[in-house]
Image (cartoon, rainbow, N blue to C red; front, side, top):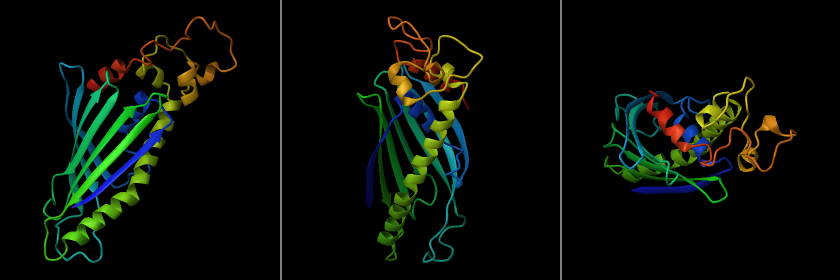
Length: 232
């Protein structure tokens, strides 16, 4: 068995990073992902949101792999997540459903809001092979190395979605805007902390009153949960 653990800090606030995480497919850095489908999405009595998705990924065998070790270089992956808007945490686990005798890959990701309104992503994974024939450790090491090589691409994929969300006309509505405008309001990390959208920079407003599009609940994460309930 091999293990992997790494943390990364996003400058963006938790609501938009969490949204980007669930919208990460498709993206230019994930050409290996063939499909991603929601199987179930259920709100719980405690106010969290449980989601199960089925993901089909394409892979490539190493040259040293025995012929016929698997029938196809594709694998089904199940993703199970819980969004807790009260604690401002996303917990997500994934594991492959086929080729498990060759190697089982179990990954867990946690997205947690920090005090400075940044978002900490913690990724852990373990690689278990039961293939035997003297190849167990070699297979596990190969899985670990590929995971390490691809995690930066995964992060870049989420970052590309974050850029789209910042520029999206729908973003203010998704994150709890109180007014609508004909012109898009572009989100920036600094604007989130100061309460000013990029379109408002240089304008004058009453400091005693919060600018429009800002709420005391910091973008009302509940609006995200409600919108996720309708996504498929």
